[in-house]
Each structure stands twice: as structure tokens, then as C-alpha cells.
Length: 251
Image (cartoon, rainbow, N blue to C red; front, side):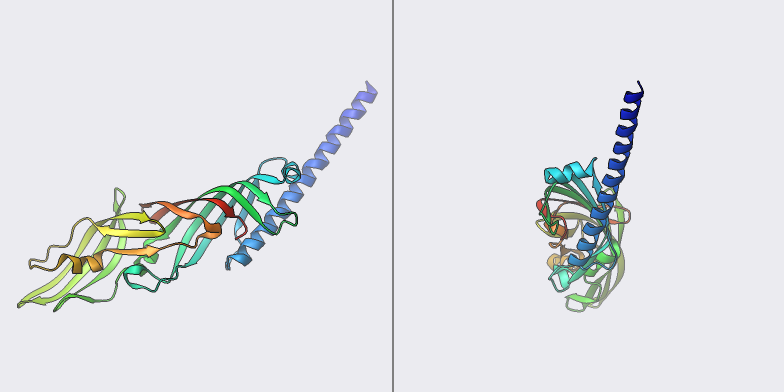
């Protein structure tokens, strides 16, 4: 009995040491991954990185990690566009959260690739407004229009506040109106489309008005190559769902 007791004590001690070693190792790996992501993605703040699954050392020995969670508070995307209805050249994405599954890594841990990844993020209405024409733009001779602001319209819609000013055939126009618009994604482009146009009391070319009320924003450089899958208007901005395969975890 004494020998058995000693063996049990040794097993418990060794198990405890293994757990400590495992947790130290995963902590160091998380910090290293966070630093690499910060450097490679040119972030101003270090992201949060969590490597899930236990034990970590067993996963390392097998050459694959079950899951890595990455959180980036503010991520500025260089969209490669240049304003107007094509979108802003840069746009900030808030609270980017990504879950990487089945992560293979190189022998020196310099790179890691996830078989699949899913993510969520938010584009604030203030940021999305960069893609709209917020300066007065002539839509027909004598009449200008501009977007004043964006907000939550409820039921998955965006409320677009538009100002029309000018005169047509002696009839003055000075009107601020709010339109409910739909938000969709096509490829890498988020599109805002007015469900109906403002009533002006005069005949104005629809396509000219839509050149102001409708706009889009290209977002094609998310971390690791994940891509937008769905978008939905929410209270704080446009909520993004993204996904990808063969995603570069470290950027």
C-alpha cells in the first residue's frame, strides 16, 4: 500500500508539472503569434490570441492545433480604391474576431495555416459614410444632393439621410429626407441600395439621384485572406460575417 501511495503521489506531481509546462508553452506560443500578427498586419495594438484545446504540447507533437481564436480591436483596411461610389481608400473595421480551425504550422513556427476560418466584424456607420458622397454633387442642372449621415433603420435596413437643394424651372428644392436602404455583399464589395427615392415634387432623373443615394465599398484585404460572406445592418453599424479556407494565421 505504501508503494502504491508513493506511485500515486509521483503521478500526481508529474501530472501537475506537465500541466504547468503545457500552460507555460501555450502562453509563450500565444504571445509569439500575437506579435507576428501585429507586425505582419501593421497593427497599432497587439491582438488577442487564444490557442484552444488541451493539452497544447500533444497538439504540437501532432503538428496541428485544434483551434486558434484571434481578436483585433481596430483593423484598418487599405482597399485600393479612391473615394466616390467606389468607396474610400481606407476603412476601419471594429472588433474583428476570427476562429481558425485545423492549424498546421511550420517546424520553426514562423508560419501557420488554418484549413478553415470563420469571423465576424463591424463597420461603423461613420466609417461606411466615407464611401458615400457627403459633398454637394449636382444630380440635374441646378440641383445638388449629398448624404448627411447613416444610421440603423431597423429590420436589417440602413437609414440614409439625404439633402437636396436647388431649383428646377423656377421651383425651389430644399429638402432633407431619410431613405431606408438595403445592404448586400457581392464578391468583396458591400453595396447600399435605396429601397425608394426621395419625393421632390419635380421630375428628376432616377439614375442621377441614385448616384448619390446608392454607394459601395470594396473590402478585399481582411487578415489571412478571409473574405466577406454576409452583411447585415445593425444598431452600431454593418455586421460582417466572413469565412475562408487555407487561411494564413500569422498574416
